[in-house]
Image 1 (cartoon, helix red, strand yellow):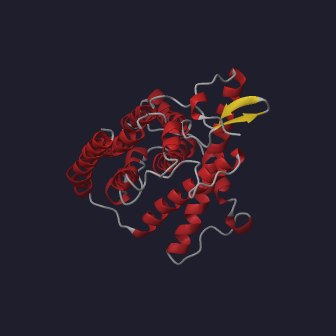
Image 2 (tube, helix red, strand yellow):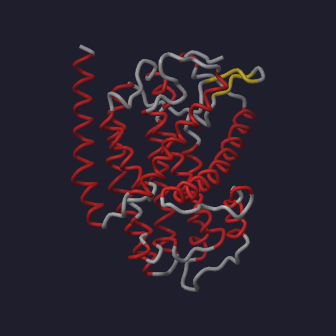
Image 3 (cartoon, helix red, strand yellow):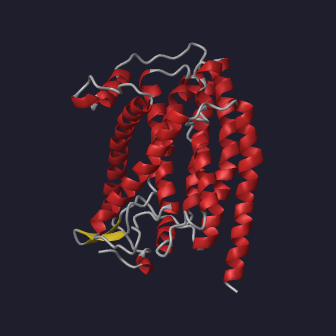
Length: 343
């Protein structure tokens, strides 16, 4: 049974926290291959062709085959590269993605085996700030990857990625300000509880659209995948990476898609809450969250199959001249409404 919001400040045993950390990493490790095969299957259907259908039943083992292929390749690096940083950069991307995944709440506090366990990694009182802090650190994984490769093309790709991430992170953060004003809390579980009467996708629909659009650029997804524009950059910041190191970047990119889907689910789609006042048992909460995350991820794939890639000047212009003013206006209007309604 779920505990009331007043009891969120409970204490968890150290071994519970360790088990939760293992479960979080295991769940993330399993979800990424599922998203990979789903994307390739759906893109095949969208484009009127077959997706993977050779390895395993209905091609379901294709992600495993890809991972084995990449991990068994010979590790190499250019002679002009900086060895330690070249090896460290993909690890930074993975660690920051998993750390961000840890704050997604998959349910409320439940009684499991006599212990009170929150169905999330951690519930920090500065949830969105925690998310953007690790997003800023992830930026170093991209920058170091391009710079440490010792290639001018990779470095140009890293600089482009840095400019894109900085541009769209501002709008993404401002899009959440309206939600924070409305919920009066920075805790992600608190934001979910605040949506008991209405999901924030309704009063914060503009913020939802801004956050989702900026998230496409933040996760390097089409139509904003300019950091890997093969027609212009050969491969971007990860051009010189192969084998397991390239797999690390690949894993981090898709895990970030899941993180964004989880944040959208938590902040705008009511988290584990169901509409029409339906209150299922506590064990249903993670299933509800995963289904909502799956729908958002499906939208990411749908957009990739539908929209062409923007030019880089269009990308930057749209971020600074359209999204940023809209996000600022949305935050100001929300602040005025909250102040007036509380008088």
